[in-house]
Length: 81
Image: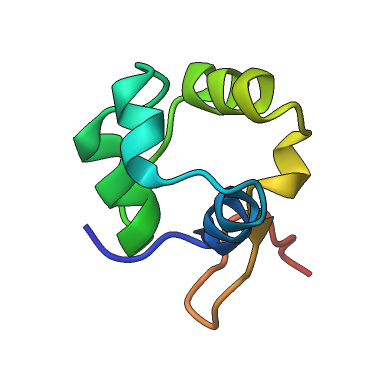
């Protein structure tokens, strides 16, 4: 599966700002290894329950974790004119 237009760099920057690591997310059963890899690589889809768990754990909003970055190949949501 190729990259998705949802990017999670903000999550990893927020972890660093809060002095947390990816290991702490796994240790505290917030996110599994496979999900963290999908987020890091930008592949696959992430369940909204995972986003909810991260927001509760980090006391933030979804926009603090991710952003939408459309690529040239992205046509979903565009209107035919």
